[in-house]
Image (cartoon, rainbow, N blue to C red; front, side, top):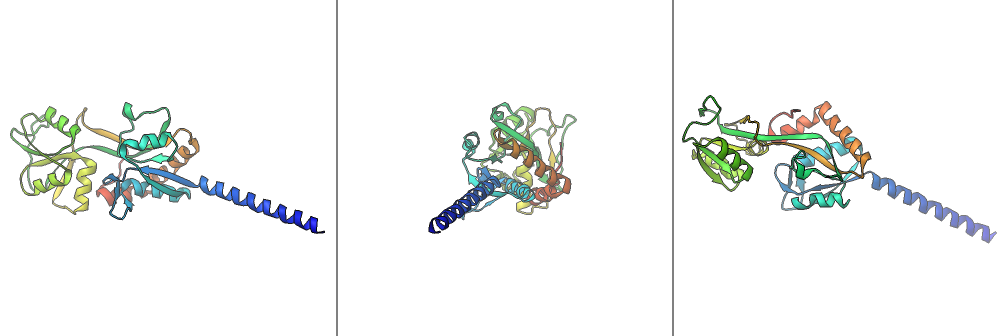
Length: 263
């Protein structure tokens, strides 16, 4: 009798252990490990307490909520994001990098549908007229405020030869210069111009796109490991849900005060 009781108890313990193990495995399968760099405003921002916010953060949280996944964020230096994904230390990566450029293509990485389109814009004070010639170039001696970003400097120096450039160490400093009437217009990315206008509620400023075949045009997508085809399908499903329901537009309005647009 005692022997039978011990066997029964031992069997019950084994069953409980197996149930617990299966529960842990299922729980782990419902977690997305997300890599962000945390210092690329407005996409991912880390405050002094280590809390994360940003457009990318809101996007992946909304997708995870739709899919009933939990999220574990991991802050990684921008240059280390791809290695962490390739080494399976994270499941997905969100960062302001163009998924279409050759250097961001990898046999081990697959990309979702686009969740943001970035391009060059000009920002000026609304009541101030900016004169352009028939080719869309600024008049001679127009003063342009430029953040110290190499790709913007290269574009401006190539296309706006007769202008005067004032270079600033940051987009926010260029905006200060515009308000102090040190220049006529700011040339910067859509994300930077719209974010800082939204953040500081600068309603006197207006933003217009710059059209050029060789201008900065980047498409941002969620990067995933090729070893997670199941996740790829789910992420795209969740992203499409945000687009169809208009939720992505609400997030876009929150950070950029503009509508999300497919291209």
